[in-house]
Image (cartoon, rainbow, N blue to C red):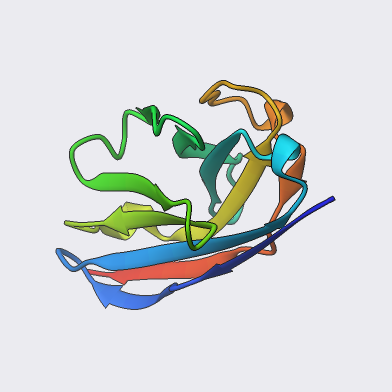
Length: 124
């Protein structure tokens, strides 16, 4: 089992920044890659970014490229999502996910464990 706990969400004005954190515990062989997804009411879950735990290889969704940065601190067992130049359309629940595969997949079905999510609201 893998446990994921997100934090760092909140309310921010457009153009502002937030940093989300995802603290990971449990089986290490089930978290070879970590991803961030988001879901707004009435919309499908959307891929935001992913990173491999060992080598730090990253992939980003098109809508966040150049604005968001995913990183990990292996000593703290924590994955971060730095979000800059936030837009109202970034408003959503943000979810951290863990995969046992060595792949920064954008497919949520490739992830086995999910956190409870943290809400990000961007006002215009």
